[in-house]
Image (cartoon, rainbow, N blue to C red):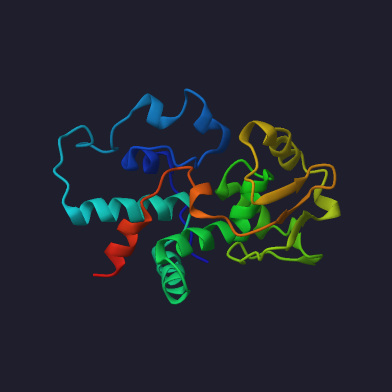
Length: 209
């Protein structure tokens, strides 16, 4: 399966906002956006005139990179959102949040979505008592995501869980820290998806051309 393995801090600098791709590092003064708040590259500090298309493209790239998807994966999810009832942009955000790797990250089992994806691929989690190692698996309301017994002693996961109170757990999720499991109580609404800020309408406009 294709995946991006290069530097990710340059993504935050390119989008001029924190995408929280490096876990706890993003909350310190070592964050690349804090240290060099301009686009990467030789001409990163130059003045650039951005067209309407450029604004739409940057918003799409920001959303895609935040959730760690490649273009084909992102386009496929957009098409799925477009076929659903309701507002396409909001449907897209909800689908992105329903991905198993995103749920694992939101519950606090990992400090970043990249780390959550790796944990899922390495068979650390079960959904409703069954092993699932597909990061793109869409969790449904009422589903229970839990650590496998052999994974409850993994130091990195426990360190992430110890810091979950600082990061917080969204209201649409429920975490049982003692049992190392959590559940999707209900689908999130648009007002609850605010970190980072997205303008999903621009993505819809871009793909509708």
